[in-house]
Image (cartoon, rainbow, N blue to C red; front, side, top):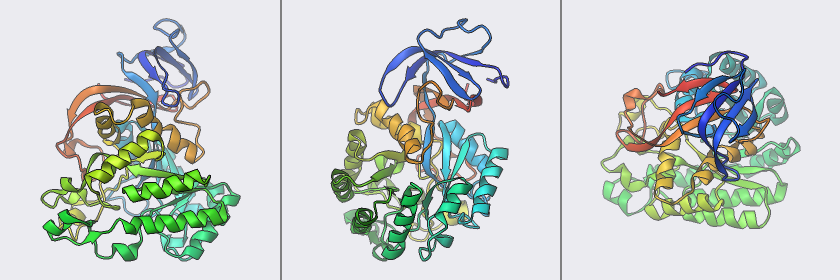
Length: 433
């Protein structure tokens, strides 16, 4: 499937779904110059004579996904992932915008590095790449970065990736300074001192496997501290990933108090639990760790009710050298750009989350959080769209995935739901058929 440059495109024979309103209708979408010009039931084959037509074959046509948390190795760790390989995986998974994490080599803590990544992405990426710059210099948690200069260079948020800021004074200053620029601070909520040598969720199952555990308090204590600092500073705050029921209580109290906070969860913590680790499956060693089934169900319920705002892939490619070790010694992380949506559809099929709410948490909500206009089915919105067949069955074959590393927690899993077409800025960049 191809499109001609500078010519309007009419996507026809689709089920249009707006995840924000939940409204669904049959019809088409007219795209021109990278934006949605019109959509609705009146747009059918032959209705716009000058447009190039693309038949969606009855698929769902929805806004493209925005992944707020993905590690891309470029610059410095291209053996794990490049901007190009990550964009191919994203396009196949329906992700039209990726927010790249800053803990690369060098760390994205300088405006020049932000500019380099954005320029490199424009040259090599199929999808939009945006940058979350480092919250502290070198992601070391000791000295605040030049947040204003990083924003001026194009950064949409600040974070230290998977490294928490343990110094409360540094975090307070960062929240205060970021507030001046209306810049969201995204924080990984784990106290490394409580994590210690732990490698999985603390509890009976960890004891049976003979592995050191990570207590839930490692997350909730850090989250509680951050809520006090948000109350003190008024800065915009996003908890990158919460994973346990106790954290939801903290988030609920903060939102009820009117604090400017949001929270996310990874698709892994919505669809997997600690029992899936089974015989020491290293692809399921994550940070934060997979929790118990009660925690997983609580996360799902929190997404459904809107307490958790955003779902992320937590895409973290690791090569065989770092994963082909014992569970205790291997590096944490799993890829997820290509499987996030299909895994999420499991929750829809089970009746736990509505399809509009799932899509909203993966598109409009993260886009709004970092100030992007995408994620909406609206006239004038960016033409970042995906055609989805929610019933298409497929089996995850790691070797066939487009990421450079193959450490997927869903290896050989049977999933339903396939992205048939991905459009970015009015140009079709992926077609499955």
